[in-house]
Image 1 (cartoon, rainbow, N blue to C red):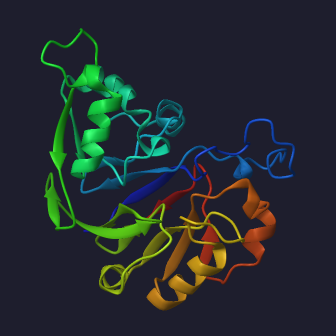
Image 2 (tube, rainbow, N blue to C red):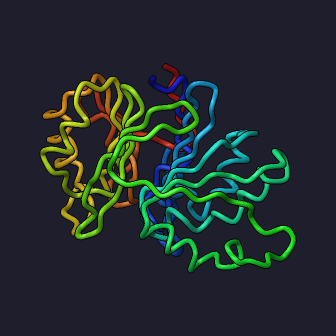
Length: 256
């Protein structure tokens, strides 16, 4: 089953755009598409509401998108720009009167337990996040009736999970993908893939590298995310891309 709707909650890199104290043309741009919160998406599928990653801007993103229900959070990896907002699932606890399931690899769960120890203790203070944690790895799994295929990618030496839902796949924070994992990203209607900037980087695809991967995988449509201010202005870079590729931007909605 493919999503019925995907909303880009954030499309920026770890420092966001505008970046603190930066006077470059991108950070000073008045184009709303150049204002990027930390990377995250909202997936609506089979009547369920999933969010991938809860970065530092999670609360702001959920309010901006008007998300009223959360059935689960899936985590790609343990870096702070993907986990720091986990505490704000409390709003959904209060509204839904239930714990929120979190799905992540063992190393991500360990990091969450360290960063948010108060949410995992035996004697919890009233009002802390109520969460149920489930360990996943590279094997396909079913989440509340939805089949999900994890995809392992490399973020320098760190293992990161991408996720495939039917004909849609989301990959962020990657600079290489093994051939057997690339095969899980074929025959897609939509691929979301990261590209940090045009010049080389130790742990992220460049724009050219992402475009080469897209050309090999041949999705019908591809969107670039996890973008830094060094990529350039949205309006200018978007004109340089192949017809089936676009830069994503915060607030972009894909209806399937």
